[in-house]
Image 1 (cartoon, rainbow, N blue to C red):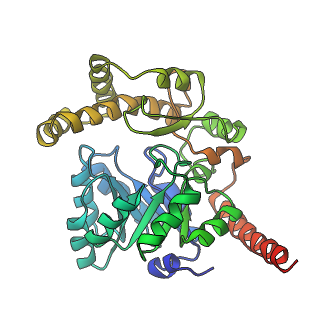
Image 2: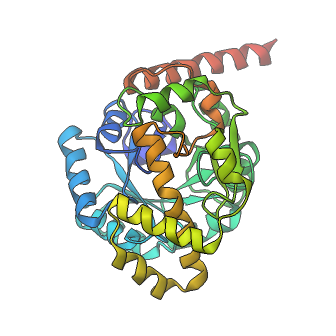
Length: 346
């Protein structure tokens, strides 16, 4: 199946692994790339030196194109983008910040740039910055999806831009891929589906929970990390979503998370001084949530941990290898296309 994304990136299938914190590591990224898709390495939780090491590890595991995902608002985000540029990573995906300087420098060595967007305004700003494609994140997505569902958001953004679109939020099957193409997208990103794969670093207990949860067993709340965030519905998640954290508790939890995850204190302090109080407060909320995210993903601890997950979890019923997922989705897309054609002819 050829689309503008497969031709732009030189990949076999229009399927991507998004850069999910603690999930999209070198091994999972390489597995997706080797199976014909594109993997984006998550580096937001890494120091610049760790980012460099992970990039180089990907290159020992695959000779296919791959990328990194950076949230520019986060402490170390700009530095990690710099590392990606120094390493000449083929694709850099940025979010939550201005990326025109990334476009200029990545294009200088022949790389490509994606921007993650959740509305038309962001899409147009990214196009002006010079990006090569958009990752359009619908309301169904894990973590920080937009306010609008993919069913409406994809065609809405297609109306305002001719850039290639990678749809994410609600996609994990071949029928979903075909639907995204029909709506105006050129590829899909499947985070939850690949999180429940054999190569994924997600804890086995959490993978099992993903296969057992329904599409309705998620919570979308601003009380978890101050931004609209979709999480797996568990007693701990329900408690986390009930009311916003007080400022003192946020700061205490953020500092604890920074210590336990090895984030440098000076990076946090510099961010406060650079960004100002309100953006820094948002970072504090996100930092307070980081430790709970890590516990669910890495330790399978859902008494203290909270899992970021998409509604598509209800369609995930097994834990196969990445290559098998890729083959299955592409076969499902062919079958879905044939079924649609039969219905139309009828």
